[in-house]
Amino acid sequence: MKQAGANMKNLKALNREAAGIVADASRPLAPVDSGKLKRSIRPYATTRAGVVRAGSKRLPYGGVANYGWPAHNREATHFINDAAQLTESTWVSLYWSKLNKEISQIKGI
Image (cartoon, rainbow, N blue to C red):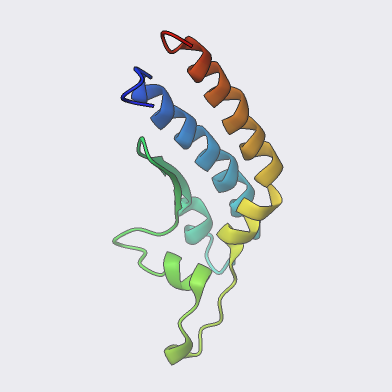
């Protein structure tokens, strides 16, 4: 798309918007001890991908809560993965709509 003249900043915003949909849906699914993990969930994006992040440097167990840690008997909850799956029709529709709009604005098409 970049070579065709698309505005890549729009693609980054689209990826962030899609990641935001998943992040919002993952908060109610997050395991809760103190609530810090739930509050740490946030969307992140580049021009290539939207990502949902959980945890931080001071809260390093976000990945463990989602993916587990078998060596330490921590079972995976897959709360972010489940949220992505539950909201898939929403963010896929968003991508189709915005990408088709972006493609129609590329010169020569």
